[in-house]
Length: 116
Image (cartoon, rainbow, N blue to C red; front, side):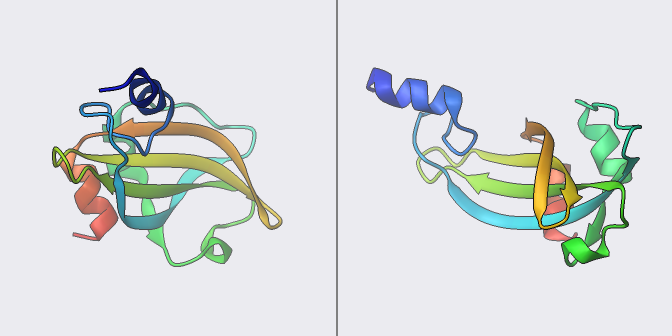
């Protein structure tokens, strides 16, 4: 395995950290996050997201002044590893002001994205 692949896997969320190969995008879901502007707190524990994320159809469904979360499921075709990337952002006009990005390997979070 080349050093270039190892570096890329370390720097990119969509590359497998186990076998250093690009991962396929499987699913995505937009969520409402019940935190208002000026009151945002980081949460690195998957339990917080399992309890608080509420699925929405589109950004227009996010109340003004509240944060949103884009959840993306990735799958490694080589080793079968799956991850969920959470992109926490504040929708401002037609832009996403990114606050945090987290990567989890929790099956429950994948099920939440799938709507199960």
